[in-house]
Image (cartoon, rainbow, N blue to C red; front, side, top):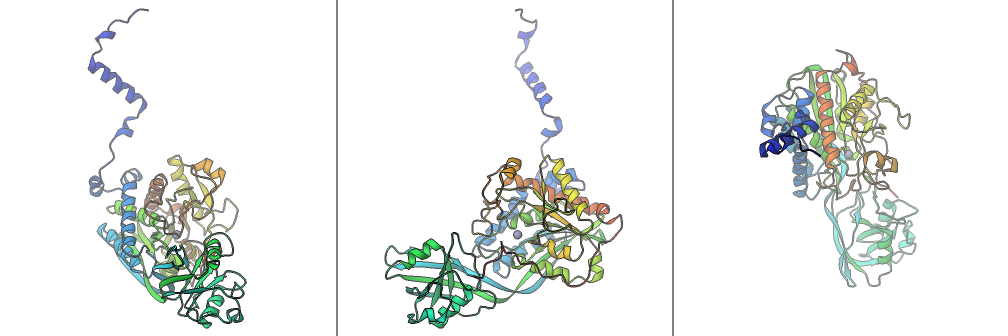
Length: 510
Ligand SMILES: [Zn+2]
């Protein structure tokens, strides 16, 4: 074996140069260019997709989610519409939009609701060991703070007044779920002089129950699991404390609307997400994720002068059956409605066990709900083009009526958007496609206290925040695929139907 001449003469510089050549061979030069700094992004006009997507960052989206988490932390752990946590969220969003140069309108409205003002407390006082007992307050429970002996009733379901014969007035009633509504059980207990009601489930799992918005009796009502209830029923000499602190009635909340000062006012691109959480938690995936992505996209588009007017909308009271978006759509005059080219919706786009779903505008999957209004298929195309451009698999998901696109579709406005999954369970096929864990929910913290800043998939949120920006900028400049170069939407004036009942998602009444 002969030594090639000159090889030994490669000194340190030569080795470095050779390494650089190797590196250049495997990494394209453009990929190693440093991304623009936040200050550079603030200073420049992100008027094409490449520039915009460089500046829409995961860190930027997470900052807004952190702000929403801090608001929840300061307000009883919730941002539910009608509560101070929602109002603070709306004020924060309005400020972000205004600082980015948009014209902001806060649209207030009133709605019938139930708000948990502080977490319900159920504690075993005697016999030892004393301590807290996990419980889920029933919607439309009254308020109270009682410490009393706990009594069962002759028929454990408590559906008849006679079941309460001899009930010791002032005691807390312990009743099983089954055979009649929770409202009937609680009313019978109240009439028998009970100071509070604990209902235990008659099947596995936590009870998500409601007494119904017609329930106005002044008595605290909460629930426990079947196992806990049976154990309590078998405990002699049981004394418990039950404390609930609630609001029932008409509350005021708001939608936050922010639009570009310029752009064609006769061809408005609307981009929306609900800002409210449920009572049970801070709602940082549902729907801090969509809200934060919109705030980030709006900030990074702040210097763009789009051809069409862009109107961002953060909705209130979505969790009370799409109240805010329905109020908005019903308030549009025929002329205003006809100016809206399309609506994009982003509700849960960073689920921890995510999928990449696009609302099925053309009903190509041919299951469930039919297609969206004409133009919806072309919106779906844009999201498909985005996922294709970043090499991510995607699937269609039904317009199930479970988010704020509902009233827009009902009014004939073409709609689309993204969704990474809620309480649905991931299949093995989906896990093979997107990773994650089959057999558990896309978001195991859906509508719970654990939907916090930690309840997130960074990669999914990063990809989808860019998808929000991509579609928003695309339609801000050109809606021709959806409604023709200068066409209008298909707006149908008149009130939209109320949101459909959602048996999987709504609290149960019995
Ligand atoms: Zn939601």
